Length: 346
Ligand code: DOR
Ligand code: ZN
Image (cartoon, rainbow, N blue to C red; front, side, top):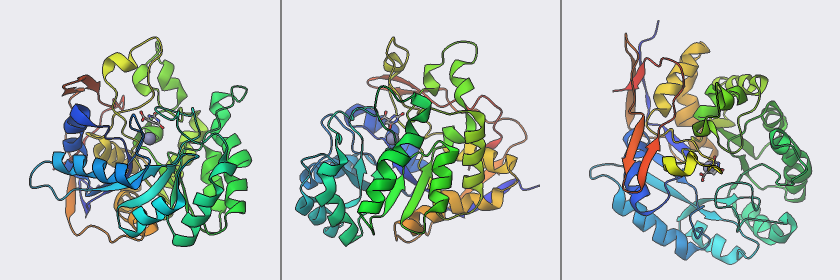
């Protein structure tokens, strides 16, 4: 039985750092375990232009704990007014790694997102030309589509037509949550990949309502039924290089989650790797963990793999993670996997 695992330092291909005091509080949790992270641009106001991304990168860099080699990888928030030249300039300057498409209204701070994807054709065509990947929040927002069907409908109605119209565009389906999403990625001849979060590998929709409503399991896309969680697990442990980790670690203070209209987001940065070791061990696939967290994403983005290593150890007794992170804005609840986890990063 494996009780110690040394792997290349992981990357997180989807994280929310926010800004100001919240960013100061959460950055150490990600930079402790990850070499790089793709930083989401859904601030208020969002990170829309090259200038915004430059300023945000500087604020992040100034907050990285001393001595850390952590590198933030920046994204731009696509709007219907995004200028293809500005995007191309940011990419050729090495400032951005991807552009993020939020359908307007799909999730936290997505109001400035895209209402009509036909309005961003020029940007997408330019991105295909220069090889700049598009990260997609893959959910439709129509009120008449059931929340549990939003991802599957998005694939049929928006994503597939968009990919057909824009050959060569490299797309990452962010936080894929359904068997439909997994199959769609597997069926693509090229240019398509997906990130999977830690929590979607561990919870299904029952967890959100177990014994009462549990706002800390509410995120978007919402966790689906068990068969989808199992499909995600199969994809994650398969070693297929099109699937890699994007934690979607998304801090909100407890007051904003435990509310009559609570925010979507799970804060899992502190215990993500411990939880993933637990999941991969359950699946008898600890030998595939490194591919999922450290190799596949770098390869999709054409970046070199980290030269640093980290070690995970299995402890004889369950390892506890602090249940809350204190921030100057209030407490943030850390993802509770609702099972004993024996792994930790040493
Ligand atoms: O649950 C989520 N929280 N999903 C998202 O897409 C955004 C994120 C956030 O920013 O809080
Ligand atoms: Zn996210």
